[in-house]
Structure formats: C-alpha cells, structure tokens
Length: 264
Image (cartoon, rainbow, N blue to C red):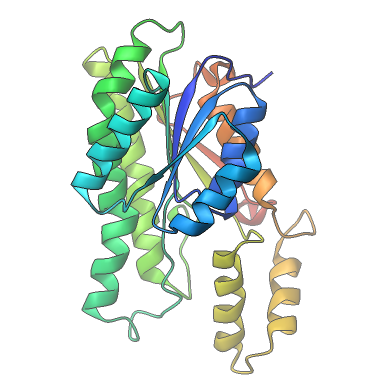
C-alpha cells in the first residue's frame, strides 16, 4: 500500500518539518526524492540523514529561475519527475489590522506564487512521465484547515490557503480537459507540531491577552476531538497516499488531516 517504487518526487520547503518527513517516507516507499528549500545548511543535513536516494537543490519558490534550475537538476539526476509536492509556505500570525502590505506581498509570493510557478514549470516533465503511467503523475498542494474554514487570528493566511484549495480543483479540471495524465490534490493539515504550529500557539496566546503558551496549547487541544496535536508523520502519510497510485481515482480532491477540528 502507498508504494512509490520507481517514482521521482520533488518536495518544496523540505529542509525540515512536514516536507522533510514527507521526503523520508517517500524514500522508504521506494521513491527517489529531491528536496528544495532556501535553508541550504539544514537541507543538506536532512539529505545526509535520509540517504543516497535524495538530492538537495536550492529553491526559492518565488523565483522562476530557481524553479527552472530545480526541475532541471531533478530530471538530470533521476531521469524525470512523477510527483510534485508544493509544501513551502509562510504564516504571518498577524491580524488584518496588524498586517502590512509588505507582509501580504510576502505571504502571496510564497503561498500562492510558489504553487503557481511550481505547477507551471514542472508540468511538462510531469506530463511526460504521466503519459506512460497507469495512474499518471501527481501534484500534492499543501493547503490547510484555514483554507476550508475561517481563521480568527490570521485571515490573510486563510485567504492564501483558500486560494491553494481552489487552484487545486481548477488545475485538476484543466489538466483533465486537456488530456494530461496529471492528478492534482490538496491536503489540509490541522494544528501540527512544527515551527509553524508553534507560531499558531503563540498567536493563540496573544489573542487570549495573557501570552500564556501553556493555556493556549490546552485550549487548542480541547478543540481537537481526537485529543492531540498532529505530528509531521500524520501529515506526511497523507501526502504519500495522495502521491501514490492508491489515490489513482482522486483528482481535484482535498484530504483533511486535522484530528476532527473541521467536523465541528
């Protein structure tokens, strides 16, 4: 189940966190993986830890030139590309009134432009490999539960992730209309034990007016029907599933991995 034997993947924002764990699980599932990030030293350490079936490439997802270089590096090293995971993202942790125009431009550049550029520039090689695959190639876009329901603390992040969710559906429909064998799905994590998850806790604490991180974490846990915060492995397993042929009848779908928060 969820095997990726013979597949080649490119995962963005993968020096650490969900991206790094996704790369590790994909290699365990039989794939060759390139990880792209701007954190070069951290990324190289991640590559050293997960093995010889991995490649590190510097990738600022807001840069068209970086994307072209990264896609070329992957195809030159591994002979093609079957899976793209648009994981790189930033979180403002600011209210609408606090956020500046510069904050908004940075958020859009990473969370939206990065997904657009990656999809556009990887599409030709994904189509090439997908044409000879029983279930085609796969793109997995990292959205969020904040892309499905409103965020009371960071509405601009919610706007960006809602954009990713609808872009996913639209791209899936466009590629199907054109006969491209490229599936496009999104995954929607809830609160997760990552650096970004820590930012959410801090934001929650500020909104309580106490800056009490312990109380903020207790309140977040109380909102989760499953009774715990998610781990990077929880999310990475969902990504690996969507990238695998086991999800071969899924395109334009959103997989929610949130411990039940959006069930309320």
